[in-house]
Structure formats: structure tokens, C-alpha cells
Length: 350
Image 1 (cartoon, rainbow, N blue to C red):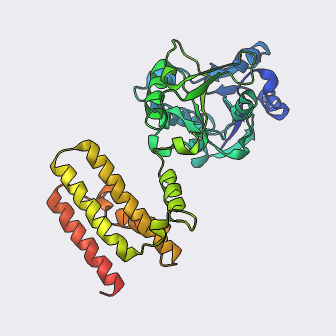
Image 2 (image 1 turned 135 degrees about the horizontal axis):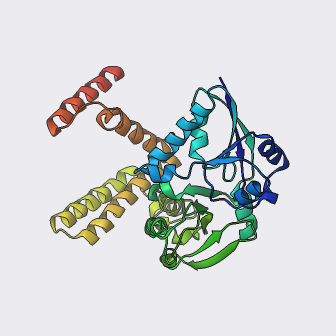
């Protein structure tokens, strides 16, 4: 059985490729490259490197998630008896799905190395990553994964359609006017960066395969969609130097307020007053945090214990959502629910 050696082409021209990677490329009988659309490819071709590309796979399949498994299957067949060299943009271990699939296979795979575009991004932006950042893929971008308290780099924002989807997702978390930086071909002679308000992110035409977007962190008081900001406010209010009224409260004295806020929430629903529903849900949540903070202050329990408890319960009581258990009607769900609750009671000795 053969072997697959994986090298990274870096994010720009040939002179950015590490010497060891360059030697491995020169020694290869044939170099298999995921995409021809890379600044170093033409330079390597000019040096006489024999290369085969997989760009036609992107046209061959209707669904994008079929492309990478198909490329990997072809590479596995090519390496049945021989050692082959496979090249990808950037560093093989940074956001490269084909590499992850190859590492999960039974074939012997060696990652030689490469240079990540991340290095060039931070140099271009003149930033130090020591403060923390998120690297996200535009193809898998989700509002729930974005942390507005950290800077964010989103890669593969290569056309207007993708940029529009990224923009709409970001606008759920950031102000429309929040300044972002679009970076093309970081670290190369073609490098270009442009600052713009978020709402202008998709105002371009064409395809830019080396385009990434940098989103600076929001200042604390602007992180209004963040649960961590709510925790910060609650901690400050209930601290020894915080609100004088809340410092005098106990879990018992706060219960009437929880009841009151819950009643007001019910009335908001009854009146079909959505704006008030939003406000009252926040008031109920605030009472939950007050209770958790007071409990933490006297050593009873912490908010983390509350979160752990509800997360475990949600996971445990929904096998029909997470584990493939069949329960397709409300009646079937109720039967399953009762079975799980009974099992929980038996385990607790009730």
C-alpha cells in the first residue's frame, strides 16, 4: 500500500513556500493539486513541475459537500501502490477539509508542512494574535459560533453570493456600520486591503479565491447580543460594590419578583405584544441570573452548575433529536419522555 505526502503551497507566490516543501515538490514525479487557482501554480509550471488538478470536481457535483470526499477517494486510489504528493493552498492543517478526510482514512498520510495565510493576515493587519481571535470558514458560518468579544477572520468569502450570506449572518451580531477589513491575497505582491462598513461587504463583482474578511471585536457595551455581557452586568450589579438594593436580597425575597415578571410575560403573550414579550423574557432571565449569583455568593451553587444541569437534561431527554431514536408524533415523544423520566428516578433511587 502506498502513501500520501501532503504539502502546503502557502497563501501567495513561490518565494513564500518553505524550502523543505519546495524540495518535496521538486522531487515529486507528479504533483496532485486541489486547485489550479493559486499564485504559486504558474511559477511551478514554469519550472517544469508536472501537475494534475481537481478543479473539474467543483463542476462535476451538484452539492459542494460531495466535492471533497470525491477528491479524497481519487487520491486514495492513486496511492494504492505508490507514494503520491498532494498539494493544497495555505497550510495543510488550516481549514483544509480534504486533509482532514485523508487523515481519517486508513492510508498512511504524512503532512510535510507549509505556510498558513494566517501569518500574512496578521502582518497585513498589523495585529498581534495574542489577544485571541476566531478563524471561521464562510461555508460553515453560524451566528451561534461568533464571539463578538474577539476579533474574527472569515476565510473563503470569494464571491458576492458568499459575501451576502456572511454579511447577513454578521449583521445579526454587529451594527450595520461596524468597520470590517477585506483582505485579498495577503502576503503577496497582489495584496490589497480595504476597510468598509459591514453593510457594504457584498458590493463587488467577480471571484476572489484569496479573499478573507477581518471583523474587529466589539467594545464591551456594544456586545448586546452576547450572553457573556449579560453575565458581566449581573456580576457587577450583585457584587459587593454593586447595587445596594440587590445586596440586601435573598433567594426567598426575590421569588415574588420572579413570579411578577413571569405574570407580566404571560400577559404580554396574551396581548400578542411581541416587543413586550422580548422585554419580559429578558426580565425573567435577569431574575434567573440574580438567583444564580446570590447562590454563588453564599456557596450554594453556581451558574455553571445550572447550565451543566439543563444541558445534560436536554441531551438526555431528546434521543429522538440527537441519537436517531424514532419518535415522530407528539404521542410517541410523550411515551419516550415518560420512559426516560422513569429511568432517571430509578437511577436516583426514587
